[in-house]
Image 1 (cartoon, rainbow, N blue to C red):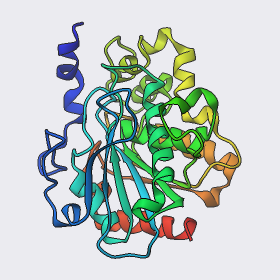
Image 2: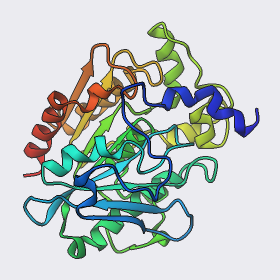
Image 3: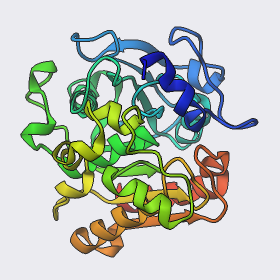
Length: 311
């Protein structure tokens, strides 16, 4: 199938529902919020290999310095999306709570296949540490966060630590660590090979095994024909005892990514890092990209989790 048809097949699964999160089509447009414009640095290069390797940094108006940091990675099936998509809805709660927010682009699958995406995500974390003093950021309190495809990258940041295959030190600041101190992961794909069986178990359409699925595009081939590449992209396969705490949230009515993906991730993490370090919230009736995920009651739970683990 031609590339131009890919978004036709799957784009609706990654498009905010009516009344949901907004989309800013051009990265250079001013963010639609006073909180985001009061102290912001837009389109900062964190590496030079690709035009995608830019980030936006937002500093809170109030809060204790050095600021705790949320590194946000956008969704879009790894083949579309931008660092400013829905950023007001994502960043405002964190900024209001005194966090600095970094929203980063990464190479999409139409430009480069995995592991380019996690290489970029880790380069972002190293950039944060290298520039911590300049922007009053706390290098010991970095939260990896993301939704959907970005949630996958956040989870992989949390479990893969400094595994050499998951990192490209030549992209910048090799002296810095890419480890994160906590993970907030919303409805991300985790185990690609189990997505279709889980959809079937839940009575949902199964489509991830086709040649132009987001997961197949990411690894550069049909997932069923490339199990080793799928295993390499699976955060569960890197879990170890020194992984950071995880907050995981997923909607039970999600037909883009089955909620059982998050259940399996939480189970695997709890078995290694302990139940006290893993929070799993399953939202009855919650859909993919559902605005309820970042509604005040659930953001309160996120902040409670972070306050506990980032003392």
